[in-house]
Length: 170
Image 1 (spheres, rainbow, N blue to C red):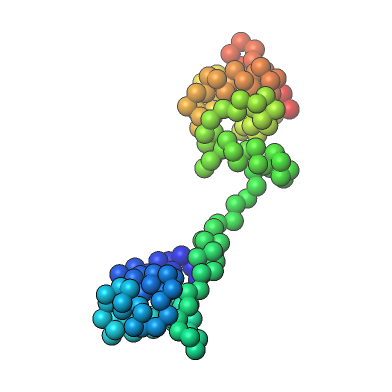
Image 2 (cartoon, rainbow, N blue to C red; image 1 turned 45 degrees about the vertical axis):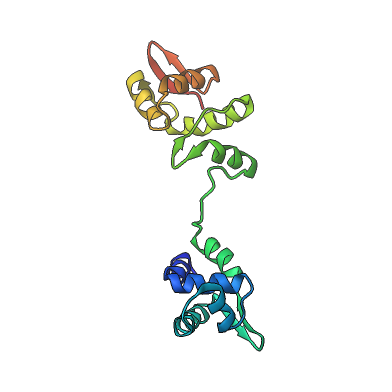
């Protein structure tokens, strides 16, 4: 079951109250009516819909919630994310600092800073010369403090600067 179907199944207050009562231990329409104050006819319709969508199951002793549907819906809604780096350890570092193609904050651990900088420097073509304004534009796409990024890239020898012209070193 996907998240839309799950939410739609519980969007009606009578279905939500019926499901909640069953989760809390009500098994029969009478017990659900006592717990919710709903009319038995309303409970019958709600239970039918919840049974049909797979949120409830019925057995000889009454209705039971199917709780795994929430995990299933969460998993089905999760988009496949392409790794930022083939190395899982480096990918984990990059994911901690890069969201939606932007650097969220600067790492404080030098080894992590290096991993992030090595990733960001790929925005520059090797062997091509860049004026400072173009470097700023490229880095500003990653983080608003492009000057700090530029300085870190130079300090870590990932780009070189000669007369305000920058080049990627590798």
